[in-house]
Length: 336
Image (cartoon, helix red, strand yellow):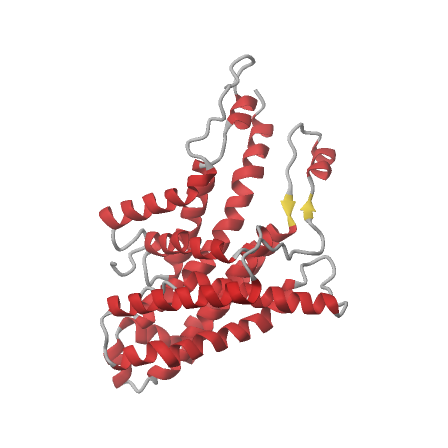
């Protein structure tokens, strides 16, 4: 039995990927929960907002590379990210002005806004596909690994190797910085406090002289930044394909609901719950058990609960269970 090799194998295929995927879902879920908490509707166009921001990043990255501009060992997409965020801000602000503002003025029911957001989702999806196509795009450049399997084996002398991709490390670091900046903004700045007041009690906030249009504008800008960052980090870690971001809407919404809609801390916690659930349930534990089991007791099967083809079914199942038994989420957000 070799517990150290078993743990390294588990870290390589479950813990490290789960941390990176959880950080990506957490950033996506933060955008969903901000819209729900402040604008009072579930934004089904969020996945395609991520796709648009990532598509803009890819186009700008290609332009920078054509000019011979790189970011050294880091992905050049990080240089393009601020410009892509600005373009995404323009998109969501125009969408709000042209579409959502009318329904806010009409005091439309949240379900109407949900249906409207589904229409926006299909339009955005079409725009992204028209601009960048439907193929898989790998836009990560620079150093591929922070630590390679070969380096790890040479350092430790273990049979099992551990690889940490540069994109995984960047994902965790960027997510931590983004979350820290968001919470600083919400808790320390006047605009952030206005947003929290507007979320807690809209009528009282309006009586206090808070400008609702400014709150809405800033909310959309923050959501655009979070969505673009989450989309770019996901695309760097895996690859970019427009339809994939449409599918990501399910685990992102599951993360927001599991954590508690309207609760930013809950969105972060829910992201990691969903990520580790998906990765763990779809991982084949044959290698890990092989290290831990006595000689001759190694399993012949993959010891996999579900195929990776069904990973989104895990998110859906968790979402349904939480809605049935704890509709306010694990961190007591607003009920759905």
